[in-house]
Image 1 (tube, rainbow, N blue to C red):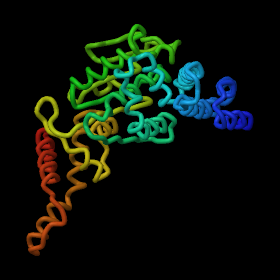
Image 2: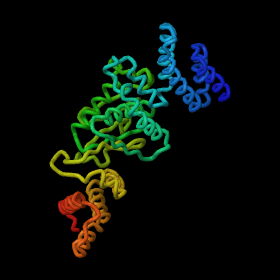
Image 3: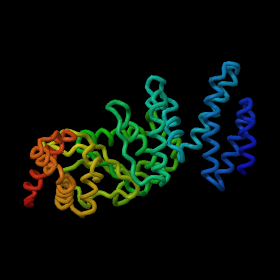
Image 4: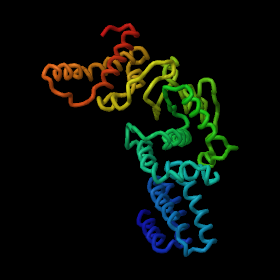
Length: 330
């Protein structure tokens, strides 16, 4: 089958003849019956050729319309399996100036590819750091709705330090999955329905009703131990600065520098919030114990420090404060 698909694909690249392109589409669909990955691979190649062909000014308006419609069908067929095609198709009917992904695709495609690898179990952990306003959160919302449609009976958990952020993500997920809305989510997953919603606790269940909902959203400090489960995805939206309620947090870049997981991971490992928080801050203090010694040594020798340790010292002070509040001596 691969040899046949490659032969047709070469014909498509040679001249963008519509019949060859349509042949590749139908043969890719046929391949998916026995080898989904193979079929999707050539659908993605065909999608790229459709985009190239529509930029070909030598084609007539009628030819462009035919290829445009073929591209729509290609994206729809691949969408349940390919995140990039899903993003293209789910916004297909939206006005150009309202679309999120197409105008940002060139920049976000490498993030989309990484998210695809995460979904395909090629990655166990993915950390995304981009400047504000680049579309990180919106892309994550689309990712949640895509995974929810793919595996509706396995719970996924979204955590944040902000209640307003959690509610916003919950509302946007529902908007994308609204069959009467602007998005074509129900075209991609026609057999999956929203079976229940809980606006108070921010939960969305898809397909079968289950104890742990498909999409669960929570913020730190809500007493959530044992109430949520992340079977397929744990999405953590973090920020630096202050949490709601006045507490401060250790900057993500410091956690990365010392190869530390987030606090939620410590809570999950400890099986409870208080023990997890204790383990988190205690580990941070242990990891940074060398800093005071370096400062004392530099002062004694009269030599300059190799870097500014102000941020680390502030984080250590906060960690000690939290351990004290937890009733644990340090």
